[in-house]
Length: 167
Image (cartoon, rainbow, N blue to C red; front, side):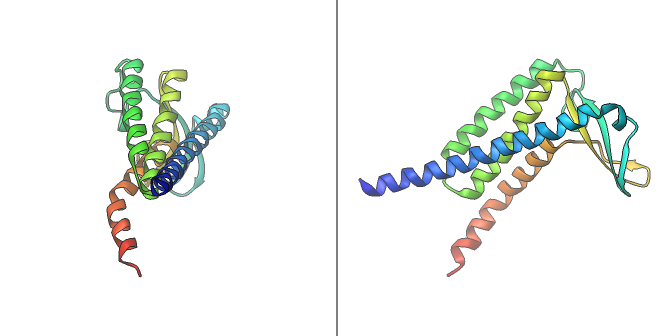
């Protein structure tokens, strides 16, 4: 029975790690968006930070790259919320720290965008990268957490395999 207790304790630590990552991602996203909203007037025209990067203020009522723009905001919230429930279940079931960090990062980012959709009926975007006159669509920190979490999920099997090979 004591072995089972250690497994449960390890599982709780992994779950706690994922929850901490999710809450940290959510807080960082909402803090940066609050700063951007507070400075919206200044950022509407764009604030150059360095060549190839501006801070801007924009709202996206669609999803990635403006897809599904014009769809009722509440339907995107319901879809994202269902995705968050699935992510939370996956987080609760994971047994590796790397997957917990990945799920937590994606979950925190998704929740950050849900908060925006509920508050503003759109997502606040402010990171504007460009080369010459070609601009990547503006995005936010929640998007960064989601992409990094997905990337980490894709790398997780490789990283876990490398760790098990080391003596």
